[in-house]
Length: 84
Image 1 (cartoon, rainbow, N blue to C red):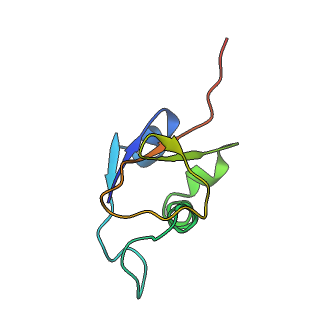
Image 2: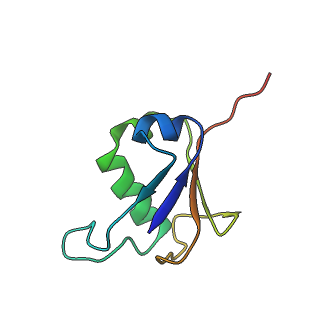
Image 3: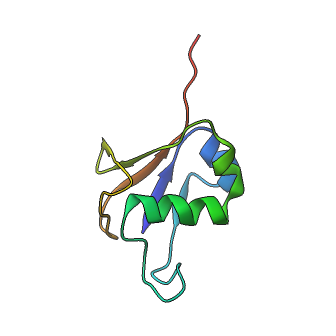
């Protein structure tokens, strides 16, 4: 599973993208929902939990935590955006 990173998420993780092997969760394959992915990323990269908001997009659409994901989906982490 490959995740595209934008804004401050690139700084927190240290890369413009992140690849997760199929065995990232003990006893499971890849995260099966956006919520499972959010929990895994928060545990692995605690800096992500400090963001005021963090949207996850699946196949170019904002996704809710209950949405199912698979390794073929295009996934992106979208941090809070400020304008001026």
